[in-house]
Length: 233
Image 1 (tube, one colour):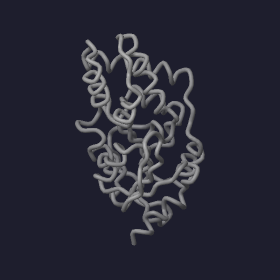
Image 2 (cartoon, rainbow, N blue to C red):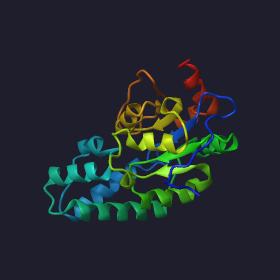
Image 3 (cartoon, one colour):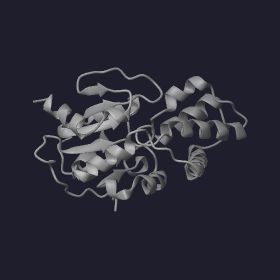
């Protein structure tokens, strides 16, 4: 069963220098980044406000407090952050209850990591109630632990979630491969010292040192992830 309590995991996988794989959720494993924006649009419509499409790039991939706070300030909506957070989580949970499409390659990658006993964590800025719903589809057994945005004092883009995940798996962050889809998530993983595979979902992400950009999760497998670590030697 997935736990947020760090537990010592196996440090290596079949002699590889790759010690763990840390995976983002929305837009990386499940095709839900658009769901969040749709729910935000719907909620603010009920409040009498229309969201500007350009704001989508501001709120994508960030913690609820940042995205919701920005939208309240931008629209001047008469609602508190706590009230809006409940409405957004309720709307999103209802949406994924109707449909939760996986990103192409997600099921295959999770099965491969599990088969080869690679310590794997789910690291998301989404709240625990949302993560647990998604885990019921992805399979709890695929993850040694999961980190939720409402369970850390500082979530993405701060390094805390990825540092906590690496520690929970008994891994050196420098020997962890992170898969992310947004600039916010990439910033978090890189600040933690991890090597990042970026698969841009909404806004472009450019390659950089310790950052590899691909177009689809279908390009990512265990051999690919181990190769990232080999390049560092």
